[in-house]
Length: 64
Image (cartoon, rainbow, N blue to C red):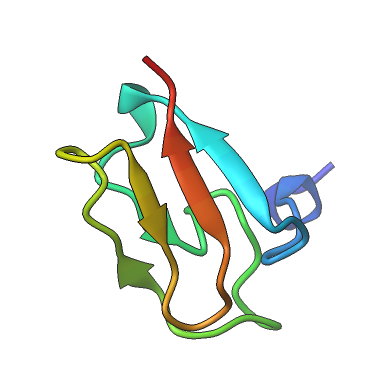
């Protein structure tokens, strides 16, 4: 199995729970495909524990 087939689809969910290991947070995340998504943007989540992507509207919650 190659690395490309192990990537999960981008923007497949409306809400994602992330951990500190996922920081810095970007949408789409590094383990997501890019070919069918918007440009990668970095989202500030550290202070509030919540972020929303301005492109696709996906919400990210930082697990405590």
